[in-house]
Image (cartoon, rainbow, N blue to C red):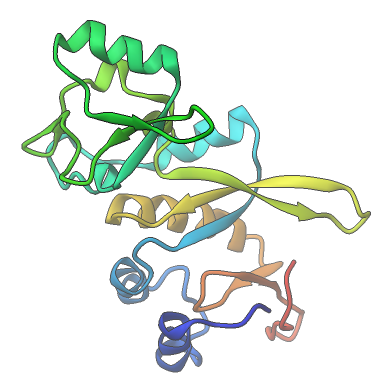
Length: 198
């Protein structure tokens, strides 16, 4: 198990004796605030079908919160930048780094978010389409093969609910259990788990 940060230590202190975290609504409410901006690795390969399955679990009506747009910069491709310019008929606040990568400048909020509603939703950049999925986590399986797993950034309650839905399904097998830091460990027949990654 990795070293715990302060939020994780507080969650372990509060929830260490609770057997079924995955179905505990109060625990997940705590996760929304304690783990804001934490990236959680899901027990799923980073493949298009798996990503789509996770994205279907994110239920966020337009105008609800806008947390998905609370970044200082958003990476876009040149084609995405051109699409924004062409379809909005306005100057797009952006900058490039030394490697030629283009970013939307969102330090003062995304210019395309109005009343917590994306005004470019139908042609939003791919990084926005993937929210709350971020860069995959690289791992090694038991056979030593390299793989990538889906990672979700807990930016809002909808992202936390999507993670919860995945963990409910995974933990229903009885083979793994959820720890308060949102990691999974094997569960043994006597109902106790061993510390360590699955």
